Image 1 (cartoon, helix red, strand yellow):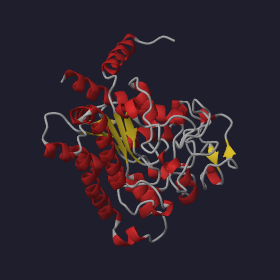
Image 2 (cartoon, rainbow, N blue to C red):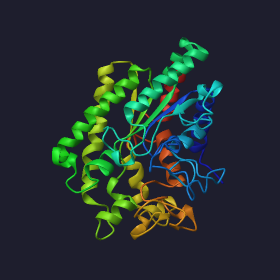
Image 3 (cartoon, rainbow, N blue to C red):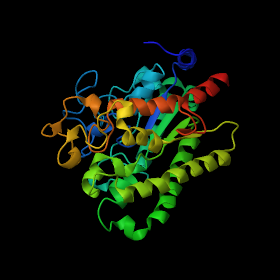
Image 4 (cartoon, rainbow, N blue to C red):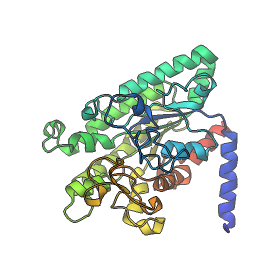
Length: 363
């Protein structure tokens, strides 16, 4: 395979940045897009701990990731030369492994506490932050307070939240409690005001390099096409919600960085919508056969119900942009992470991961 000279130079520069960044801790907060198995330890229906989940994971076993293989945090860790961080509830997270960071994410959660109520036992955002506090206490006790503060200040942090506040709250049922309480144009600023409080708490707890994902094209996932679209196109209502939410999220993050007033940004907005819409609108250009039909599921577009051992399962996972009714496959996740690493301002607001690491290493 031949690479243009410019591409080779980029690979060399990026590789050197990641080599310098070895030992950087990684913390993950949020929902099923980034949960690496915390829900395995909870009595909840929001689980991915049974086949065929994990069919393409290195062990070929389900791990609690909502993917056929690796998820976004795994691929970020891989890209910066680190091991995947363990779920916070995993008993193996102890000793020196604490220095790698931890994943606090829990499938089903949203920005709001009532989001995902149907899943019962999940680690809601205030609890995830409480787990982060307990993690810091554990590191302080073992390695000292100064080491803990340095670890957290230099760490990379990823947070994925917001999609469930629409899919599993506002639009979950017709005339939901939240939709009766707020018109959609009022609901978006409300959840963003609550999100700002969460992000500020992460900053107060020492976070200085925080990637904040927007929502993907909510109406274009197989589940919503199956349930809400009469002709196979993206569901309009959810698409309008995403179109309202994502630009206002960027505005909120921009203002939050100004409010904090440091010489470098703390929060970086990940344009998940744009990353996903690329392969959704033109799957063939990214090596997929379809972006409408899930690899694993049942009903129209394989979009109804969960992915289970009894579901339809595609023969060639590489052909499908979506693994299950809601979640991208590993190949799609790799494209998303590629844009997080080196994407232009169309994909990453306030800087991409390469520029973040370069700024950290220079300081």
